[in-house]
Length: 66
Length: 512
Image (cartoon, rainbow over all chains, first blue to last red; front, side, top):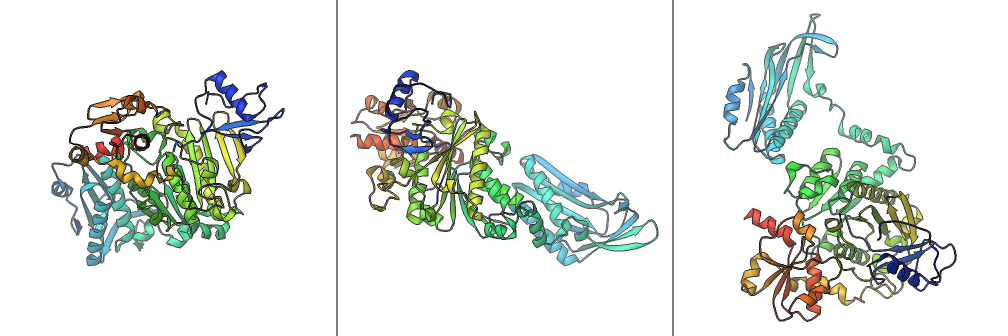
């Protein structure tokens, strides 16, 4: 979404939704949360999932190219 | 035009007979008498033929060549009787508008003539001996078909997980590949080469110059031809032991079930959400397994819907069809050819694993995210959503309004012929392609209001007047259909979408 595939960050966000909002504000991400899905430690989870230290979070947009 | 002659072949006369003012190419093949055969010095040859049968069979071969290749005419002459070293034994000439077809047809004719014609030759050797040799045995195609087929698959049947038994499973499988593009080419290549016994190819498009960089079946000379035909021809040429079904049509609610019912597995190689979701919904309804793949710039996603393993469907994750353009297609944001190649190859491998019964658990339940910029693969566990409107325990009947969009297409879509009669010039064209798309791809021949849409369709509501009539256009009519349905929902009763988009419009202009 912003040209890099992964990075390690320190964040004060409590849950996945807050983290996305934080990243969206920092990097100007445009895709809405209604479209994106979130996975924590390789499992799809709801947006309100509480994050722990050392969690791996992936934001997944739908993709249709072929 | 075939001649069997005792006299030397008159090449000039044959060429004259083939002459056609619209021919831009002529290719010929000459077979000469050679001075050795399998290490033995040969002094001369004698040909003998079963004349009537040879003539009939040769005419059949020539008409096959005319049907298979885009040629104008073909001729062949074969000598019988005694021939000396260096003499012309067989001559083939082909004319065509463009050169490639001549070359291919010429090659086809000589290969078939060598194996199918009842012509025998007697070789007179330097040591004074002589021997009758059937031309069939000269050709390298001496193995019978069954044996050839076994050898063809020998490199993969050695694999302990496959063996002859696994090969048999593949041969009995029927797989439909939807989309013969960036993903479809590698998928078809490896399912075809792998020996899937029946392969259906479904695609409605013709070859465009911008396809070729990532779709290795296709060549410049084929631009404008139906991709289904080109792909089928390619697959047949790499594996003659399988059956190819051609579905040269756009997949829609009208034909999807009648096409799906003939296959055991579906591969989604399409490039738009609408078709992917339609494939998903129909597969759930008909309990057909599907392997999906999608690409985006340097990344791709892979997942399967396998009903016998209760795997989640697309809508368990994405409930509604994302609007076209929210994460754009290759047309809009570009794709590196090799990314399509890798993802298609992985998709084919997943499909073969499934057909062989050697899939691992993750393929049933996980979404794989592949990033080819850093060579990472991340497998994300998916869970069935009990509230899923399509596959959830609540049953298929609960259909949301967005899924009904397809049923209203007839009201929304309009053909170019109907535009003038129905709307009587009292309308405006709206081209929603991006600036780059407009510059780089097919041009739109009418004056249009340009509203470039990247992700935000609501801009249409700001720019357009609900009291006016509009026909929305985009490249293939998919984004414009979404735009038109959105406008209709928001109080624009006289909005239509051009069916098949600018691609189909240009095609019909070329044809007329």
